[in-house]
Length: 195
Image 1 (cartoon, rainbow, N blue to C red):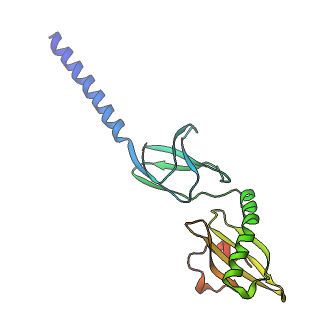
Image 2 (cartoon, rainbow, N blue to C red):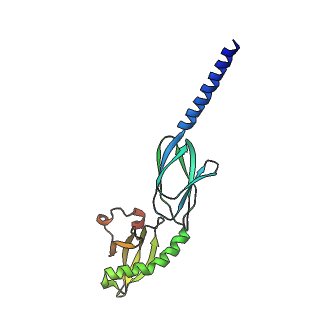
Image 3 (tube, rainbow, N blue to C red):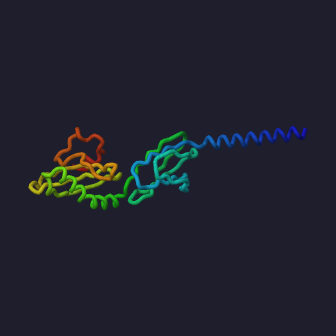
């Protein structure tokens, strides 16, 4: 009788351990991290802020069901904590944003390059004066206003996009008014900021 009780207890313990192990294993879900941009590290943190892992390229990772945060570590990037939840398989798209101070410095550095690209592509505006220029929070779009030397009252607007090779291409050539027909994938807030 004692052997039967010991066998029953052993079976119950084995069943409980197996049940716990299966539930623990099944609590891990695939999370695909789509990292837009480059030159940064993504830190994954648990709900208490403890760093769990670092990711430096798009790919799949396993995380237990629960609440998490991610933050970006890299020169000039905003490192605020962004929450996300894992319940099932999930895709997390990371769109890093730069700090305003970094963007301001970047715009100053890129202004001569952008002016050179504009004057090479449009020789008739070689003596152009850039009144203002900004770069969006993702570092993808450069946009601004310029004037021509013979027309100080007319303000021309331009929009450029950073290519995969980190150079700039003209998306909207210098023009007084930007029509809706040429907007395509340009974020609306960029167009509104030019007026």
